[in-house]
Length: 160
Image (cartoon, rainbow, N blue to C red; front, side, top):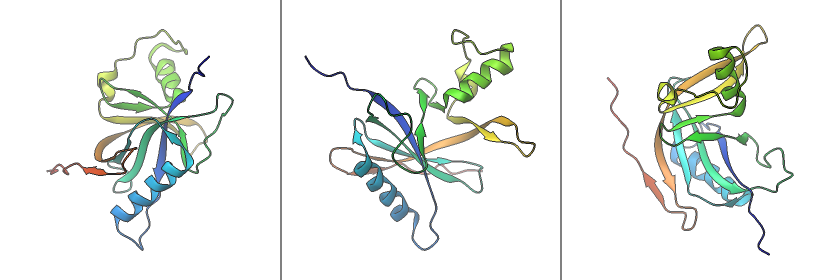
């Protein structure tokens, strides 16, 4: 009998390195991802806008052992995506959205995903110690083919 694969979506936050250019930083991060995981999709690199001048992260799908609760790669966590609106979110953020909208967590509550179009939605620690919902605009900047390693670059949009 064939084994069922446990495929999960992950996000790796890419740390900047002022000693090298951005392309080198991205390629180094993608190399670490491909060495740490059995990939099932291409690696997509995004820029998180309006956050300390923009920061980078990569998303991908990989086979994960069913009993594995954490990622083996630093700065990497499980993520979910609403493909229709290109919204990336954590389960904790989804639960917080429900709590804010209806006062409780409810897995059947319909979320208006268009409100979060082209965003990443997560929780972060606030100065008073609470976990607060944050959302940032995102933009796809490159894609690495998981079989060949070939990169496709997306044009930067001019911002007014």
